[in-house]
Length: 248
Image (cartoon, rainbow, N blue to C red):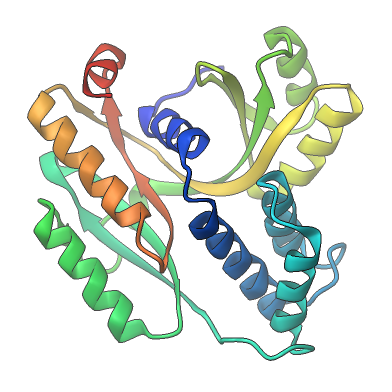
């Protein structure tokens, strides 16, 4: 099994080095709250909530903070009604962008996304223009202390579709509905799981070799990711390892 997009590596490295824990926590709590509002507060009956709950725990969000978010989502505590909106766009070099947001003011968020794109070499696209290039997948990140063969063996028996080497972790890909059972199977086999989630993965990638364009797209992705309402940014950019190292 092999991977195909360097953006997963870029995002992983950024996440590992990101000191803005408060902003990260706020995004994770929003995701928990919305999942509880949409499907109820029972982790066993709401797989989306279970995934978001586990994601927050993996990132060291305090348990009582997560539980309060669940209660806001179910209406037990007063909370803000966040609306999920996905924006589609293009970045430098024709790179496709899928920008997932949670907002309590769609006009504010839409204006901000449009402004961030236009100021950083991108543009907003019509709905459906790029979404077809992505597919939702489950992702389980495993500590590199595990042997590749062991991860692959357990993975293949439990719905894994792909195994990618992201330098200091293994990333296992599966169908969204298999992410929790795959995680459970890996942990039962004594393999350390760092994080599990669902994400949008590109079906095809756009190779980028010009250092100027690489710097521009990485800057745009960074700016979008830093937006308070943006929960995740997906791209089909593929950057050569040596070029990526030179930019970093």
